[in-house]
Length: 639
Image (tube, rainbow, N blue to C red; front, side, top):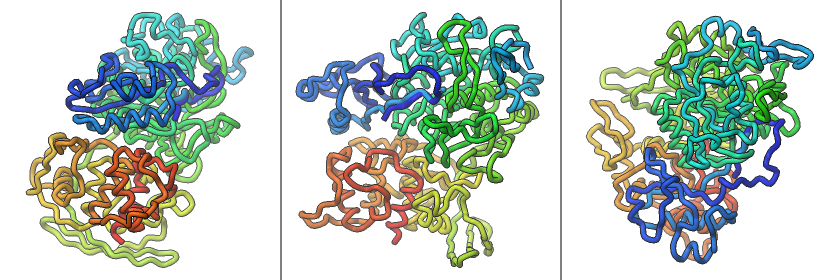
């Protein structure tokens, strides 16, 4: 899977290959330096995440010798998967995975800001989204730093002068010029929209004129990969970035990238990413990851960008829209060279720059608060409220900065509830009546709630194959939506979340006396139920074992994979082996371990996998399970 820069207009790598995307494996281990036959690449470590980046030639002696793989050479994807499986079998390895390639997605006095003979449309995007009024409040603070994780930056452009901080290239592990020079143009295009200095009588105006610029180079052309992006994220966070701009997108994520994004969010860093340009009904990664602000692109008529070959992706993870067509910006070829570009790559820096302005007036904003302000102040497009084509709508910089300056944005993380809910549901063609009895430590209430609309606006028979299973489990109180009332069926599920779902579905009693045995699971305080209690029960019931041979670690914030999900359900159902001649329709080579294959074989024979879409010889069992898939399998378990 290649992750691409989400813009159109600049030259791209037509071969789909990139010298830094080859044969890269992300490995998590607690004692990797002790693994037999393994030589580590020191430059490929992410100690903050406990992850090592390896190349296939570092497997010795048999694996590398038999495949004749040299560092940096092209490797067949199946060979890479074989390497990952070999690593996973070694003692001390928690998990190993192949990196997903990535691809690049694309009233001040500045001469090109207003329409002219040189730029007939002007910088229309800023005028349409309320930036002039926002600039009356702030043009940015030097205390705020925006990291552009891209193809580098042309440092000779005067609109960036004096503001570049901690530049770096993860391709060469160097901060020295010209390691982070932009030889492609995409990074400079993006930085121009987000960060070009305005009202200085030259060039163009960007969104945030005065903030610091941290170019982190992850690509020499149109491609990169998830390991490189993860390295760039960790570098940017550790060197003081407040906002990350990721105008790259791909078809999938990895545990390495997931943990890097979570690392950024845990450190209070806002992550903004492009939704992708495939015109697909699902948001690309990393934009689709929880906590990331996913940005789609509009045209000058406020329609979704839908040009041939460059159409803004839609889907349940979409947050906001920004201008993404006829965007005039630096092309990187020379200090004074500009051009028109389009794509979600160019929409994303509008949002990134706006987030920087918001942090300039209120530095204490958390990533969740930034997201809340952006979505609640957006100019609604399409159907009323959130929808899959436009998210919450087009950003409004004036409103967002005003709300931030006034102290708006109140999102907090609520503790787990102590409530136990039992529900029965009857359904007719137009009305669903739910009778719910809720018991807490001090009160008991009974309510009847008539419903004439679908429970979640992003779940319907037309958009979600698992809508019935989602509705059923939601009615039972086993799953719920987010604070916006959305279910987000295509998003991944954390391992600790899945443990709670399966324990709730099976009705196991859970108390604060249940003690979790895993070292990496946060222990709760007080008399409320938290994830560690549900994990403790799942472990006691033999449903979960942990992610290391000694069963000391659980990786609670890791995404549960399809294989792991099926194995846990098979254990929960106490399934027995099918007949020896039973053929399930998939092979053992599709799984990271024989245990997962054997459990999936049991589940298939028992009919538990019949509700999952696409199970067969090409099904990616190692991919993260989606919320919809989890509901489908847990629903089958309860039946």
